[in-house]
Amino acid sequence: MLIRPFLPLDTDAVVELWRAAGLTRPWNDPHRDIARKLTVQPELLLVGEVEGRVIASAMAGYDGHRGWVNYLAVDPAHRGRGHARALMAEIERLLTALGCPKLNLQVRADNEEALGFYAALGYSPDAAVSLGKRLIVDGPPA
Image (cartoon, rainbow, N blue to C red; front, side, top):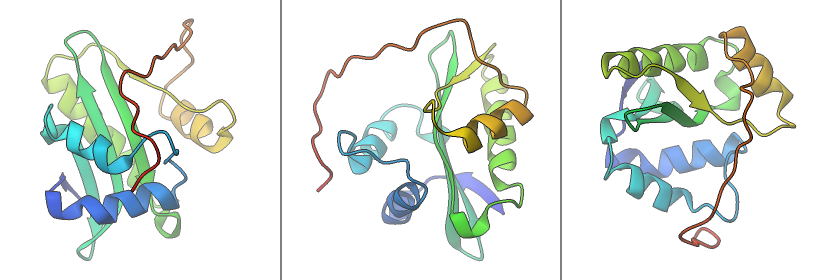
């Protein structure tokens, strides 16, 4: 798998990938999420491709205190081949190069597969509660 920065022409393929991986929700418009990311550290939106086809993605960021990763996805037909592990390694490398001391991520509590994956990479639950507040309502994707 070739890991490279996201290009605008990847948008439809990435949105479809996120849908296939079960990452989209009606209250988060994936097109808007991509557009927003392209305004802040666009080099940290990565895709993985095999034979010219996008089969994986990850969106990362660093705010000067913590790094974050969202939308880690691998096409279900390409899972079990180390692609997600390779993307996470690249994100960790890029964030470390920026001086990021810690990487955080959120996993839905019922996603046992993802929790197991991250545990195998050395991630563990923090003694913290994740809180959120919607500032901009996207509504359902167009």
